[in-house]
Image 1 (cartoon, rainbow, N blue to C red):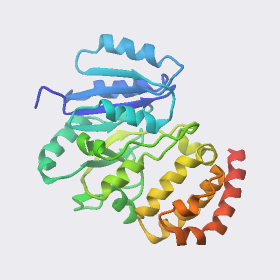
Image 2: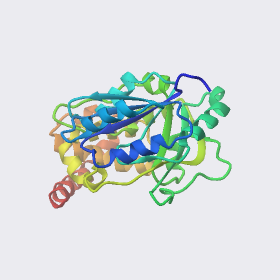
Image 3: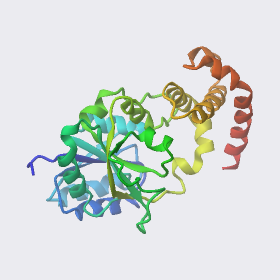
Image 4: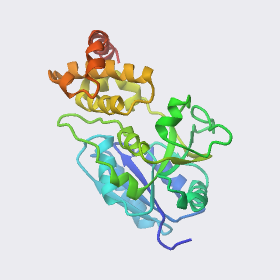
Length: 297
């Protein structure tokens, strides 16, 4: 193995001092220490900075990098991480999750066997803290897929992505909309899907726990707070649809989110203008549903 770390494990963190310790412990348990741990603190006001400084002083087996930035949302933390990463590969492990046992060793071995085949990286599995696969594993014999291709063919559950750093940097950064703090992380992945596949690894790389205050638990409120970010993502989905059914759903959401954003030019800006016009009536309906659901959350 090279003396230079081959992968960066990056962790966006926002007020997760009470959980990021288990992320650190999972990294310390890795057999293969050929990694850098990059923590991007997205404006935390808790003890995150103090904890990380203590770990940096104590840790002897791998490098811990820490950068603090103004709170801007998960996608801006990813932008900052990609600006800093210079290892061959990178993987995001959230500040309430754990890297699976021997995950770095598993990734290293897999990558050595496929790195000359032109893949954008590796797609592996997530599991909960009891080891239960999130969604489902990969079909037997599946060697490669795109992320969108996996879901459009019936795949289920979050998957752990390991990307080549040069490829993740080759597509545009996540856009930032003033006053908003959400853009789907899948934006970059969808763009990469148009040109590259991921090597399939039917092993668990990350153990995850979904927090009650996470964005997925408050999605209706997120729609109201970040309509421009969501409308941007729907436009990408309409340009690169996964299926006809999904295209229609995204068109309805596109209308709704532009109504929330008070954007009068959304038809002209749409990559599917005719479909957008057809989606106006159901989009108006979703707009009112979203406003009601957001109040209830």
